Length: 270
Image (cartoon, rainbow, N blue to C red; front, side):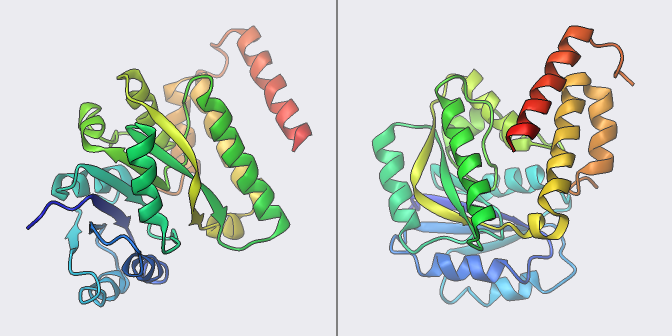
């Protein structure tokens, strides 16, 4: 068997509604040289049976089971099974235009990047959704000119050498795993690029379920917890972050005041 150009790794847990749509998109790609590895966290719905229906159209499809329900653990497990030199980590609810992999191949070969993070568009186009997407894309793009620290972990393209050099995703992290991953990549001297095209379609289902203000509040509290220290962060993460199975007054007053002023400015601008 010839080594495929891409290994596409999809962690899944009870994604019977969304995963078939992504697999349909993959079966329709103009570029066909890839394998798919679904890493299921022992779903209790029809995720596996739905995925198996695509075996005829996607002969390179593999389905493996993770005993651990954790997105980082599932990604790392998929990477161990992958054979390609370029890994694509995709959430199960993404959607891809038919030319997406062809475009990613071109960008990977011409940018010289070790890690690519594409722009995204919302799954439902409303003025609010498009404003949010544009703001996030612009933020990620601008911070690349300073020091890359953040990316949207819903879709990441990374070379195997870079991935293995940082030992993959940190399985002890339960929040903002993409932030830790990109910081390790940058610290090890690898090149990170945000690309404006091809775009992929990002699901706003959690925004619709919880609301933008609720989500923003959760993220703000988690970022505050990170500033205040690991103990406080762990407490907040357990309360606020759905993926999870007192140093508040020890920080210098100047640091806390600066943080709060920045939050006030962000909220005012929003």
